[in-house]
Length: 299
Image (tube, rainbow, N blue to C red; front, side, top):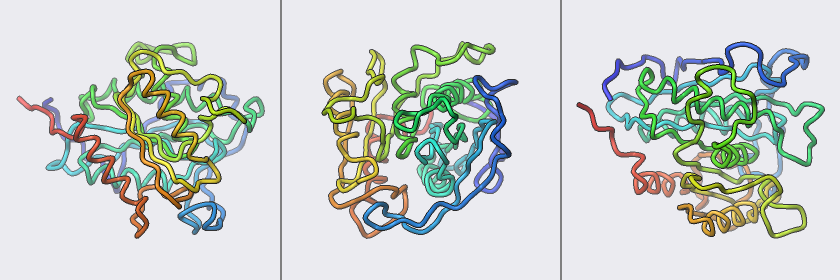
């Protein structure tokens, strides 16, 4: 891969709208996009209890590209899906901070600003459907511009947190069928991530049953996954990731699962004296073992 080095990075990410015109199934009548602060929660619910910046009222999905230092770059990229219950996006904790961590590994971090909050036809008890349209399109957009952005088109992964973890899994297991009508040639390019990293994911377990939620499937070609969860998570119980891991194992998909005792929800990638904060190191080792952190071969 021989490309001119893009100048955008942590201080000036490149922001790209992913849809060329009208956004599928979007009325655009929910008001202007805005930042807001997350509520302060109890330690029994989350690990990061202070307020952080969120984004909501998103009608024009974008990707924000954060490049690593040139001497660290591996050619690998990850689409980042912040959580927020499909109501908001935890932009600071599960977006910008994740991009910085990925850059430290030599990985391009690409934050997906997908549509939130839920629209009236998206029930609270189920995952919202529009974000998957945005994620599928975003993977294809990144792959279509991989050479321009210094990315290996066969090393494009996806990482997500909470509801964003569900979105990462949905994207990794629905690559064989678009959830929208193709709009241009970019939609002819594969929307399959090369790997997925779902973190304290929700919406994976069926209600009152020890099985995957309806609508989830693991087709042939599902990419390898690294799953992380807190053992005391009351917002998205660890059974979500456990059941997904078992289903992946049965399907012959390479997968690794880490559940951290006494950890709750919303720990992102922040350093802590709790063992859960070592998940990022374990994940980096997994990525190396899978071959995604090897520097690209350059002519």
